[in-house]
Every structure is written in C-alpha cells, then in structure tokens.
Amino acid sequence: MPDSGAAAGNQHQPGKPGDAGNAGGSATSRAVPVWARKSTLVLLVTLLALAAFGSTTQTWMTATLDPNQVGQAAATQNAIQVQGSKAATTVTALALVALAGGLAAAIAGRIARWVITAIIVLASAGVVAAAATVLADPLAAAQGTIAGATGVSGSQAHVELTAFPVLAVVAGCLLALAALLILPASRYWKARTKYDAPGAAGSPAAVGPVDEIDSWDRLSRGEDPT
Image (cartoon, rainbow, N blue to C red):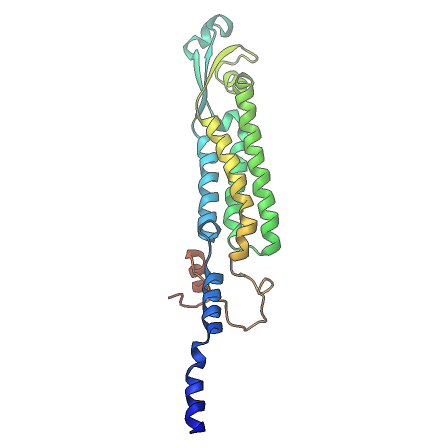
C-alpha cells in the first residue's frame, strides 16, 4: 500500500505549477519583437541608405539663366538641370558609408555595434546637413554645374527645387533613428563570435528564432539550419 501511494504521488510531479511557469517563461524569453529582429533592422537601414543614395541620382534643381548675363554662346543652355550628386557631393559618399555600416552591424560583436551605430548616425547627420544646405541656398549649390555648362562663374539664375533634396533629409533623419534602434535590439540577437558568447566554448547554442542571416552563418560553419 505505501508503494502505490508513492507511485501516485510521483505521477503528479510532472504537472507541478512551477513547470508550467518555467515553460511559459522560456517561451516569453524566446519571443523577439518585430522591430528588434536583425533581418528587419538591417533591411530598414539598407533601404533608407539606398533612398538617400538614390536621391542623388535624380535632379535636385533646375537653374534658369539670364541670357543677357551668360552671353549668346550659352543662350541655348538657359535651363540647366543639377543632379544631387553635383549639388551635394557628400550625400552620395555618406549614404554608401551608412549602407556598409548597416550590413556590418549584422555580423559585428557587441562593442563593434556601438562603433558602427555611431558611424551610421554621423553619416546620417552629414546627409541631412548637406541636403539642408542645398535647400537653404540652392543657387550656391548650383554654381558649379552652371559654371561647367556655360563657362561663366558667379552668374545669377532662377533656381527651382524638386522634392529630392527633401527626400534626402527625411531619409537621413529616419536612417539615424533606425541606427539607434540597433543598440536596444541587439540584446535579442544571438552572439556571433566566441568573444560574445555567454557560455563556455562547446556549450549548446541558445534556442531562439532563426532568421535569414542566422541560416547563412550556420551554412558557412557547415551546419544544416533546417
């Protein structure tokens, strides 16, 4: 009789409330917010950097010249279109820096992410400053293109802006905000190097959601992510 009572008591042990609580806590710890997913943030930074870069390939302003000032030789070039890459040359380079930084943040370690985030934020600030300078004084930004087309420097012209300088400013601001999200979001990302790993070498990897970048990393190590 005592043995049967002990056996009955043992049967109730797996159903203890503590086990259910641990299972629920484990499931909660594995949940990653959508905004904190590595693939989501990397894609967001990439798209915003490409938006800033792509805006420089478009016409930022159209300068209408005064034929009496530029002379008859340049009379046929009274309307000159100025691309963003010529009006604000630094935007192109800084957008590429931010793009490279966003891709590097996906595989960087903890300390490197701080450095990369700072670089992206500074690059974004440079994009905003350069585009805002064009918006503040479009004639000065167009002088180089006007001089190259007409051979006359310092000429007066009526300049009409397009929407692309504003797009560059918006993309730069959003890019800086997206870069700042990397720091809190990286707490949910799994360690990528042995220096960042919380456990000792050879310990089993933490269970968590696997994104596209995780799958590529496992394939590079010879593992089957499926």
